[in-house]
Each structure stands twice: as structure tokens, then as C-alpha cells.
Length: 393
Image (cartoon, rainbow, N blue to C red; front, side, top):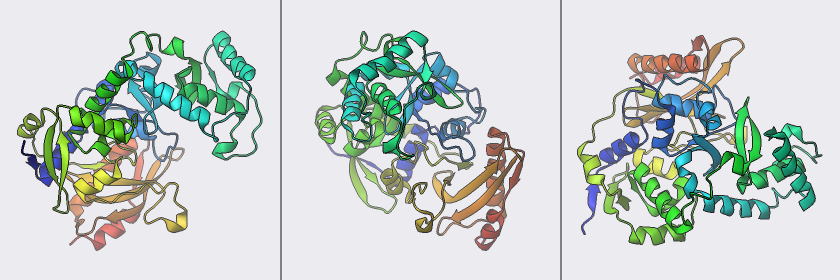
């Protein structure tokens, strides 16, 4: 069967549509449906202006406000576990997750940085307290730590994490972003009763990954859920009902990949994304796979939060700027919630992209909308005005 050829611009449009970024972020808000469409949403402790999960959901519908997703966790429409990172996952995925509980639980138990040093009786006492007292946070337990490093966390925290990865414990709810642990069977009442056989579950996870990626290499399928090995994905791909495709990269080269079973229908109904300028979060699913991002858009991006300041090319928390179907720059923001302002502290246009007043104004409007999400009243353009003026023509 001859491979279906997908030019670069169509590949970009497919990816933006799959990520809910091709239409205006307006209209009736359905938070659960946004997360179902994305597959899951990454949650993060860092609050630069607002936390990543709030920004990701707001980027799809700007009627979203901070904290709206937590009721879905409390109502058991979402559950919290680990994909490529801590994530909120629609509960309909739960029957496919038994293998991941076992896989990550065993990995956590082996990992030196998670080993608690507590005996079985002490672990059981932690579990027993939660059974008797109900959901408890890590603050309810006391045990010493040697320092602030990840590997030196208190023994009780390591023990809680071990049991959480294995599904013995689960996130009941979060309060001011603090996780409260409860027994897995109380949060996941149908976890095993409705569980798929491991092989069937893995097939369905792979299928759902391709459905959300639209076009993908085996490595991209693997990285979506991060729930299988490269060999398992290759074996599944060899037997799966997918369409062979050749995808054009931003640099003009072509790459063999696979398309979803309905890829031709998706291509037939494609339309050009709107020209809106969007501020994306560093953890947004559209840019999470940095290799795919650079291949499709020619946009090199690195999250430099954990890079020493002297070695950063851009900044600590830098937001990509998407306009239509291309990235036109990146911006660093700082905020003071107490004083109510948002400030541009760094701005970097993409090479070859001009920043006339019209484009600056589009970004200014987006920043004003973003500020409202975080309850901020004032936007200070700072570095933006100066740098944009040098790239206006």
C-alpha cells in the first residue's frame, strides 16, 4: 500500500486541531470534555502566573477559571496518576490502567530515591491510619528527613508515594494543591472489577494515543501515555489498523509515520486555523514532545526551569507564542498577585518574524485575557515594547 503524503502545513493543521488549538477558545465550557479530548491534563506545582493545568485548559476555552477542574476529581470523574508526569485522567481510562499501577508500583519500590526505609509493619500503620481516619495529607505524618533533596524526603512521604504509584492509595482530593491520600479501593471502586486484560488494555491505550496524535511514529505513540516499552509499541504497530503516511517536516524533509484509521476523512475536513495569537504554557500537550514540535513547526523549545541561570538561552519560565499555524516568538512573564500586575520580563521574536504594532497589540490583548485568569488587573509590556520596536520592519 502506497503511503499517503501529508505536506507540512496540513500536518501542522492536523496537530493543532487534535489539540483544540485551531478554533477560537470561546463558547460553552465543558472542562471534562476538554480533558477527554486531550487524553489527560498535566498538573504542576509551579505557579509562575497560574499553574500549568489552569493555563492548559484556559487555552482551549477562556471561560475557564482557576480551580474548576478539582470538582471533577472529587466527583470521581477524573483520577490522578502518572503518565509522563503527574496527571488528571478521565475515569473511563481506569479499566486500562491496572498494568500501569503494577508497573509504576514495582518501579517505585525498586527506586533508591523512593525507598522509605520503613518496615512492613510501619507501612501497614500508615495505611491503617488512612483506613480509620479517612483521607490524610503528608502533613498528618511525622518522620525525619536528612535534607531538602528529593532523595532525602521524609520516610513517610516515600512510603505514601510507593503505595500511591501502586494504586494501594489514591488521591482523594487536593486542598490548596496539597494531595490527600485515601485507600485505592475507596477512590477506585471498580478498578479491578472492570479492568481489561493487560494486553487488551495496552492495545486500547495505543489506539487512543494515535487517535489523539492523528499522525505518529512508534516513538510518539510510546511517549503519549508513557505506559509501554518501545518493543511493545512496535509489536502493536505491526498488527494495527493504521494508514502508512509520509509526513513533510518544517525543513522540507519527509518522514515515514502512521495515520489514524480515519486520517483521510480528517484531512478532507481540515481548515486553516484562525489567526489568533495564543500564549501557550511550557507544559501544554501541543508542545510536550519537543522533537515532534521542532519537526512539524521548526520551533526549538526547551523548558529551562532546571537549567542553571548562567546557562539559560531564554529564561526560567518561558511561554511559546503561537499565531495561526506557526510560532512567532516566546515571552517570559512575572506576576505579583498581591499588587495585581503582570509584567513582560523577557521577549524573543523567532528569527525572520517581524513584530509590527499590529502583532504587538494582538499579544497585548492575549496577555490582558491571561491576566484576568489569574485575577490580575494591570499588564506591563516591559521588554516587549523595546524589543518589538527593533523587529517591527
